[in-house]
Length: 290
Image: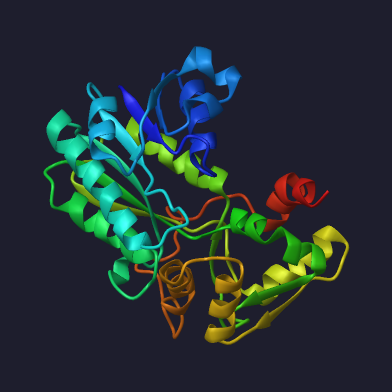
């Protein structure tokens, strides 16, 4: 099976690539910057230069491919949802023009709402576009990445996190490596067909209060979290140079999942993955804080 992997240096795909190699697959890595692929991987993979927002490049790079692991790349943008639309168009064109029969799409919890969830609306649009095609597609609706804490390392160091979510509202948190494991097994399983959703919820739902408690215990320093107003969060995003539409899209991912939102896929043995936040903190966050 010829499997293409996008964003190969991303939080999930960097693990996925190595898992496929260990499984005996020689994946095709699509990257805007092929020179950034780890040298140790080069003997075991094929690499093609392709920008996931450029349909012509993606079509050219995926000729002869049987399956694609696709990520809509999130980039700092004046119009993030337009960027998601361009990525969706590139994927759809590649699937149709190259006869790609299987797609595993990295989506998110909240995409089932279809509208009103900020950047996640872009993922929902990709789901809808793929479901309109006569192919086998699995949407991985992932929980909140542990690695998002790496985007706020300075706040963790300062011991003061902020959120617009209720502090006691629990939601799925997941390790990117666990998403990669599900992503690797999905295209290799030839028994499923049609359009399906596979949630990836991590080992347990966590509230921000619980996250702060775990960080305090594992880091040996007090970490607190406070709930702030939506406008205060938006002003903070703008203050660090984020364009207005991007700030609204980032904020919308949180505000759209408040007020009693429950994921469409319930937590079961199928959606539950093993790596806990404590283990991830020891393995990855501690080193980032050094």
